[in-house]
Length: 179
Image 1 (cartoon, rainbow, N blue to C red):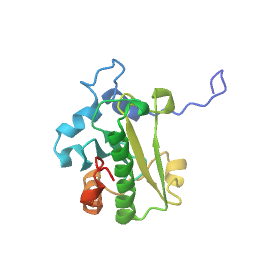
Image 2 (tube, rainbow, N blue to C red):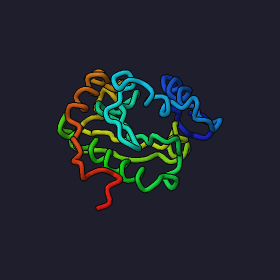
Image 3 (tube, rainbow, N blue to C red):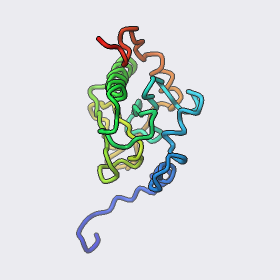
Image 4 (cartoon, helix red, strand yellow):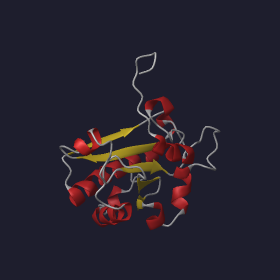
């Protein structure tokens, strides 16, 4: 214990993730969330591409199927989204939940935004919403005692499974539809 009586949890493996997403200089040139859409879907682990957002598997998932719905436009603040971006962000999140439910039948979900670095957003300059499937007991003894997260499926296999189960939107479900 240190003088402030706080225990420290050292996670040096996260530094690669933090460095890859270091956007503190304010430019999007090095933003991994801007770079991903330039890749082939299988290489970038993209599950869905929309007009304003895309869905991609998290490279450092909390659970199998953990994905992010990301704005195509490099923007960090929720209030900067256009109405069309907001609608598609929400509908793609709904579709992600549906695809994951169909593919792997989780018991629940954590869905949310980390707005700003202090809120846990290591890529806070580029808005993205996490969709994390949860199962009863997913924080088992391996995680708690062994400090090890068991990931039973390769990301490429998870991607294929979610792509196969992603809902097909109806033509009237377009985000730009005036209904």
